[in-house]
Image (cartoon, rainbow over all chains, first blue to last red; front, side):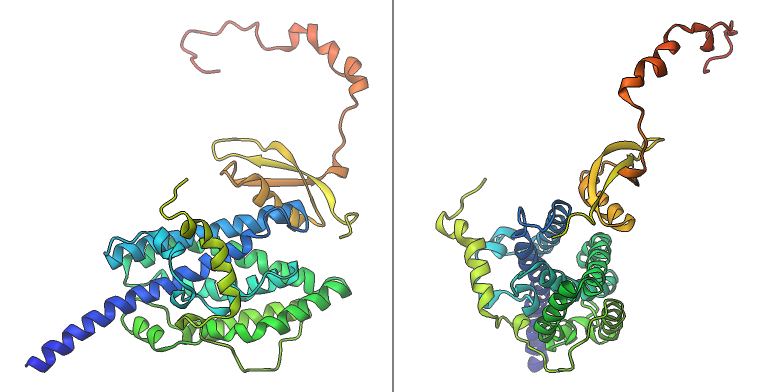
Length: 264
Length: 95
């Protein structure tokens, strides 16, 4: 009798932390990607794309905010969305490795975006059916933006891939460089499985073939060659990051850490 | 980046309450699909509209300002072209 009481307590404790961890995984991706994309502001290759990419950056920051607000509420320890964004170290960030890779040239940004957007679309399509009402509501709201992002990035992949010799070469290089970070997105770990079985999270095994189909179709239209290699980098979701995240957070968190509690 | 392939397009937006598309500005794009997307990103950020038309600027023919006199002056004093000489019965409220 005593054994099962403690077992039940442990499960409840584990679930709340797991639940929070899962939300942070969902939130940290758009946070870091939004932060990276914002660096294009004023530097876009042409005015209309400068506006387009920074619009997308703002969409992501908005999604991150919704999720951090929910995380703060769920945790119930008085932390706010700002604490989550500005006061966590890289080890506590749960974003995938893909989103922290550098912007590089426009082609690299677009390729990174496409690999992420195609995953994100299927992910949120599943999340809108989550038993967690908040996640479901956030997913429902964000799905329209995400559909637009996917349309935008996939069309640009095709234009640049099936473009000039120079643009084609740059896109192929970008794909070759970023490919090893793409597998992490759809590869479930214990937390993903646990959350899916609880009805809260998405089934990554279901998403993976959909994502692969989308990638294949678009890359073919773009006349780009999918890399042969199947070895994939991972660790981002567990808090093990590349050196890039350190620089991203240092820049993003500098003001808040240097002038604690500053507001504007 | 070669600008010569990025033509100028005029953008018309119809707002949610509106009946007609209004001219809101112009932008550059290499083709019609991109012109629509760019117009969405540049001219509907603040929920200005729900419908977009784009027309390549080269396809728009405008009246010559120098010819304004002969084109528009004659209409100023032709009061008989306006439907204002009918006696409307009181029962007709909206016309």
